[in-house]
Length: 427
Image 1 (cartoon, rainbow, N blue to C red):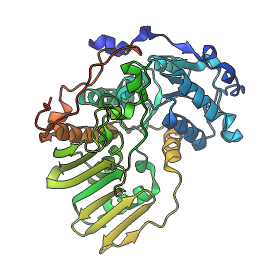
Image 2 (cartoon, rainbow, N blue to C red):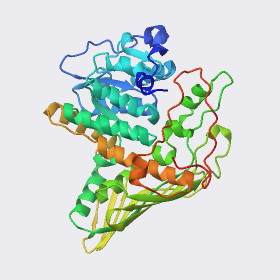
Image 3 (cartoon, helix red, strand yellow):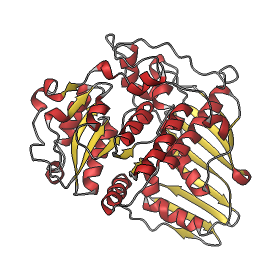
Image 4 (cartoon, rainbow, N blue to C red):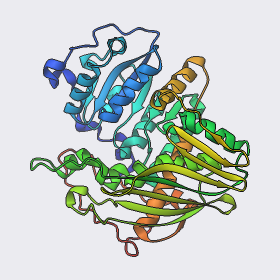
């Protein structure tokens, strides 16, 4: 596809209004009139995370309302409307989604942006994040976008460019890297920044867990539809689990060190999830990242059932160590300290920080930091897939672009082989 057709993102695919597709759910709630002084939110991507983020936004501020919904699949919008209709009535009063503000299809995001919203939640599979973010910023909308924010270097460059436009327009941008808004993390790293462990010499981070959901293919589904419904297992959609999930831990390391890596080398493979239903992603990665000043970070992530689990970060300093995990923080050394506990829900707090900033007339923009954390994960994947070491500049300027030939729900997609280190080329 040429650049223009990618940017247009199949505008001819058509948008189906909810009234024609939702049957008895249409108009079942959201009857209260929208208030002009509330911030109107559009949700783009109505799966579990998008729906959850909408609830978190309502919990974060009484001055916001969910105003429009969009998703590629009609039944996802049905499910979102149904689930939102079951939440606390005090929150439900601020769901003002009329039937003509619900859209489906690949270009539903355009319709949400044109529906009168002030801010959007971007929660589709990660491949679409750069396209949607760029469109939202160009439309002058504040943005909450889930991590990761791209799956390839081409997408990262697009996010970085849109981040600069958002800065110029004084738009607020917050990312779903909720540890940046979590008290156990902010307090622990405040002590680290004050010198509690001395200069950081290295560290390690982990997201090791069992397997996740998988969607079995139905005979009537095209390649495109099955991959969209089973998106975790296709690199063009998820970035692989090192990008889709482990980015949280890598973001903490970048945050603590105050920089992104300068190079990395990695290994990984596909030992257990070998059935075709698992697409072509790996099930384990190990990466060594080098940061400025020779600081080395060891990164491990795994999605294999029956193995020991660990989700945490560890920092080694010249005067002590720091251990972090959700709800926990500990510093050992001359300046010992432990997080006392008790923290707001970080999934709500990240939205609160966004909307409080908007209402105060200030600007918050997390676009660059989450783009750099996402590229940190992408370069680890690129190294593991190819067996090659690479630098930050190589990754950032890579020609790798995983965009499919077209966006058509009926299209066939070429089979993508599982990467073989030593044979898969580094692009």
